[in-house]
Length: 262
Image (cartoon, rainbow, N blue to C red; front, side, top):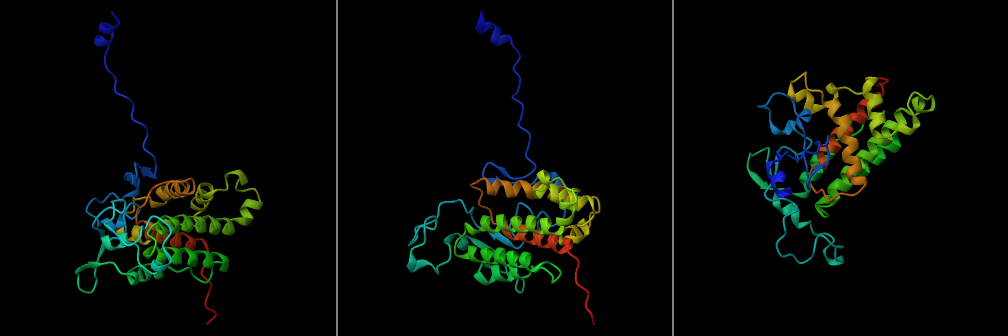
């Protein structure tokens, strides 16, 4: 019978879908093995992509339902509460580097963290201004937590802007196919032509692992992250600062530092 035939037929497992190089796994971003240095005992700060800054520890997920508030942080902020912090930031703690004691994150912590990233004077002014806007969007995630992914998307838009400016002559000369002159293609050209290197990233230097090819991971990951946000996603992770850091390191490598005439 048909039932008997089905009973004797060997059961085969459904093939697992291939893992994505980056982006989301369900609601949360993850990092496959190539993102990580091979030395397994390194501090988690080196696994920069899927995590918040290394000294920040969220008490609960930002997607967890919030306790009762005077306003709903997921809707347009009432005018009388526009200066109130997003309540989700109250569930993030940091380690005070002076005392080693855990304490709630303050607005000044966001400012201090993002102000550490600056583009040198050799970067064109338009790009530097775009990057400063990225930093302000990140800073104001203190008030609107969902500005975190907005800052992340804008930082990657700034990166593509910088790559297009730096490689404008190569694009005009046909060295880069205009149809492929998106973030992935531009990153690949910059890497292949040694305009950026692993040595230019603080996390790679701290890892002390010369076999870890961070650039190969970034080439795949950054365009995918940008596409996830650009095409719509519910991802909400406090990873913007890590992306801003790596974007500023790439842009600073792309443009020569001006010489001091003195």
